[in-house]
Length: 102
Image 1 (tube, rainbow, N blue to C red):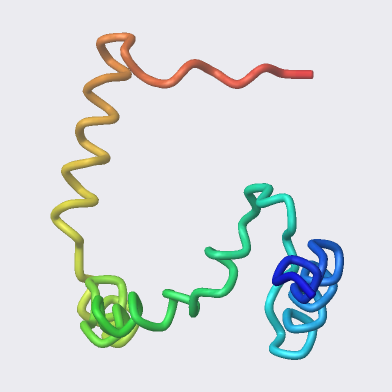
Image 2 (cartoon, helix red, strand yellow):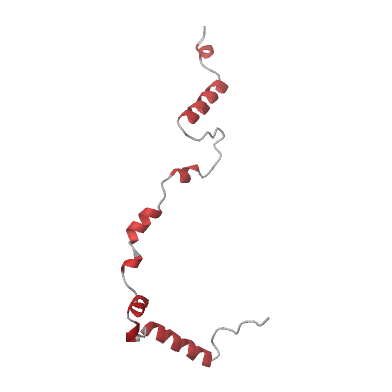
C-alpha cells in the first residue's frame, strides 16, 4: 500500500477544516475572499477612547455659571465678540444670505 492512498482526499480535508471551524467558532472561508471579519472580531474601541479623553462634563462651562447664577447677569465675552463680528459683517454685506420665503 502506497503512502498516497493512505492520505485523505482534498475534499475530505476541506470537510474536516469546515467542521473544525464550526466547532471552534471560527469563520469558514475556503476561497479566501476578503471580508471584514478581522475587524469585526476586534474589541470595540469606544470605551478606551472615552477613558482617554475623560468626562467632558466634569469642567463647568460659562453657560453652567450663567444658569446657576442668573441674578449676576453674566455676559460671555466670546459670545459678545461673535455677535459684534456678525453685526460688522452684515454692515459690509458679508453676512449670511437671507432665507428664501416660500
